[in-house]
Length: 142
Image (cartoon, rainbow, N blue to C red):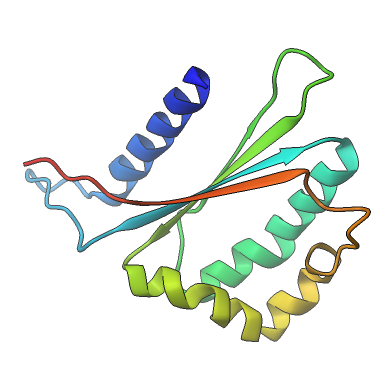
């Protein structure tokens, strides 16, 4: 749990540094939001399916929506019997962009076609064991 907190803190700090150009002043963007997804994977097959979905469908689809600088991070425990985890960090310029992105991806034929194996996975062969999603608003201290 402590490792997760540290990792998420580092991810958010990295996104902050990448998002703020150096101008001598740090001005926060308008209400920036971050969606953090944590995928827990039980086997190599799930990891392959998720990698393919990210590479061929999700990331290109989000880029078409104007969402860039998406972070994908993998974490593995030292114990080979434990599940591996994949962290996905998606920055949104506004809450409205977050709210409309799912519908826009649903209407995106290229996304639907490229992500068909992931999106239509049978219940008895899922592409992940567990998915946790968190939406956070950027915190700007002045």
